[in-house]
Length: 536
Figure (spheres, rainbow, N blue to C red):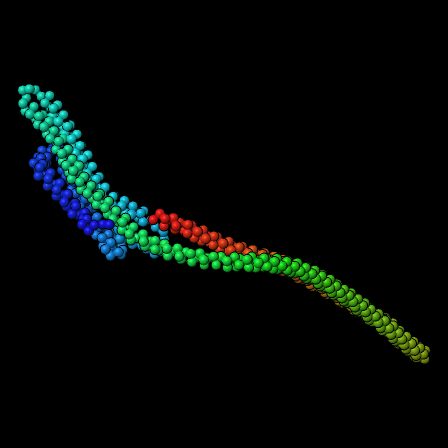
């Protein structure tokens, strides 16, 4: 275990004072001359890198000192300290946290990683020391080049040119000084001082790693073994519990398999029933469709029959109306003809009466005239003797007057008969014209009524056909939607059943896999524990 007198900072101080004091006291004059006579200034570069390496070694010593203190504090307290105080405390705190979580760790691997970190810090000192030696060698090469250049000046100068020879010899001596002084300072500071400090820090680091490994074996390993034994007991209990659970799982698995078999049979039966239901539904739908088609067909036939009846009724009514109109027209024409005939007959009768009256008047006038003439003749014959001359003239005048009266009366009778005949003809023509107009108007009215009736019948028939066609299309759509819904319901039921069966099978397989994984892990852990106990 770590000793309490181990102190990296004290070791670093001791060796720093010892090496620097010894060599500086012996070689101080050479140091001063090197910084004074080195015209290449390489000695200053070597001194700069030496200061960096010397400071790095000091900080490494401080780091190792803090790690030793933290390790000693944990060793004294037998407890892991604050994880933020040092790297070793953080490492052991992380290890204990994983042990508490029953995780498996390798203590030696952790300590090896910790030692690698310390080695990386210490190796930085050795790198700077190697750089100082290399820079000193480079200074040697530069000095030799300066020496060769000086000799070249000496060889090229004349023997009488003393100043040139002196300058060449001066450059040659300065180059030799640069070569030797840079090698001296680089070897002293890098190859001696930093090498000694790096070696001491490396030894302190190895001691720290060894003490860390010893502490881990004395403190961490027992904790891990105790936790492992507890985990083993817990694992055995879990194995026992798992065995019971496996037994229950086997029983449950058997019952689940039986349930699946029974449910599969039930599902098959349900699918069979569903298929029967679908067939029955399809059959009922076909029957309903056929009934609907038959109903629509009967409705169409009934509608057609009613339309035919109504068309027959309309045709009959039109025929009756035409017949009635013809009869009315015929009766009217007959009445007009009878009226005309009666009018003609009455006109003839009136003409006959007028003729008879005129003839009678004429005959009566003639008879009166004859009577008067006979009276006059008698009077003349009687008074012939007295007034033969005077009476003869009067008789003559009277006869002429009677003739003119008879002629005038005949002419008036002819004129009145002609006027009456013309009036009767005009009345007959007017009656015939009115009858023709009424017959034409009646024929036009009958034609319009027939066209309107035909148009209404056509419109009713087209509307009926459109309704029947729409009913057919709606019935087809409803039937297609019903069949599609039934197919979707069947497919969804089948998919749901398959998904439930697949989910149950996957769940069962996962449980079996988890049980197998747990068993294999427990068996592997149980097999490894004796090996680890035996190795320890």
